[in-house]
Length: 506
Image 1 (tube, helix red, strand yellow):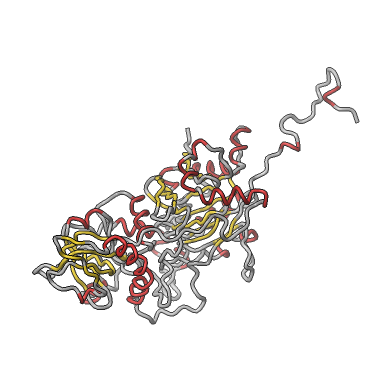
Image 2 (cartoon, one colour; image 1 turned 60 degrees about the horizontal axis):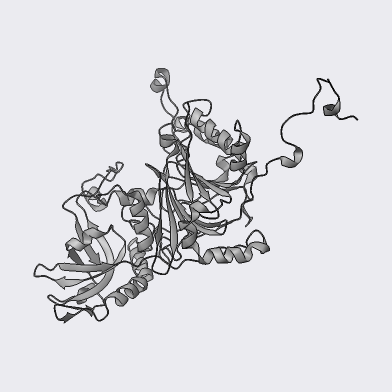
């Protein structure tokens, strides 16, 4: 057959555009999820929540003691050597000493379940407040022996909340308070090397990957001058609602952006580098979950079974979210974290959203008995895994939102940094953040330091890099709610450099 392009004067032409060899291929994803926050199938709620704080103190105390000992060993203040005491009960008035314990914030505005029960307020829903912080708050330090109040201006130099473990140095005054002159935090946990759990994509790059894992600080410092690799996309707060029969314009634009539709070839080339999408909580709108009723329906008696009215449930948000995932999954893998508004367990750590909620997307998930990861990976919140060789830790935002209530600050990145330096990602659980009562281990203790730590459903985008005493380097990302900001975050899989993309409708 003759080539149509070679026929002079013919109106027939071969299809213009890219040749078959030039078709874009999406970058593959190297992915290894961890089961750090998975609960056992047989769960018991008979144990007391106090065991979690004792476990936390036992786990973190050796690390903070090491930091305090290296800083204060042999220290002399006003001709008096600093003495170490093992328990809060061993503190003596007038003696300069240091001790390690758990912080407890005595806050008048914080909800008190015992007070609610005594006043018969336990039968109604708890009253949520934007802030627990007030000028009347008191900082105390406790261990298994007792509790002592901490005073001193030095305490204002760092964020402190209930549940974090610190070492304090000072002396007890006549009022029975410990006047603190210095305190130490555990600081960042040991950080694993890149590709610690999985193999690099090719053995030829192994040496370069190993070199990069040793020089991570230089990578992040010089990221702007280096070539970019693949991309990891992170979005949160999609908030699918049932008010409309179709996707909102912003969500439709997001889908077209991730699929590379209606974009020029250069933009498509860039988007083909996105190897994975991470959805970090609040994919379903809480306000639109109920079916709107007209006046005739409101007058009808409601038939409830086991106290549940099935007619009041609106399945449209879940169906729209399922259609969104089903359109996206043939082209890229998705990691799905639940959030406070999603149909998952309310206690921390939240367990994965059941795959039965997504009938159209379910074929892309792994079989129930399989240990492999499907392209749709419904995971816990918090979640830990290895993506492109980097150790990644992420949450749907409840841990930072709860810490926000304890402090007189709007700095969400500072709160994220504090959780890393406390080595505890959810210190306020179980005090004010609902949690499962762990008895054998506290999964919120950060045994390893991540390379990338993101928190979803935050008011605005933010990012920064923090470093530890042993050259640990962590990239922090506050992921904004998409419904409020129309923003999605892209992370370079080689340098961990972060960029923000805003999708607006002209």
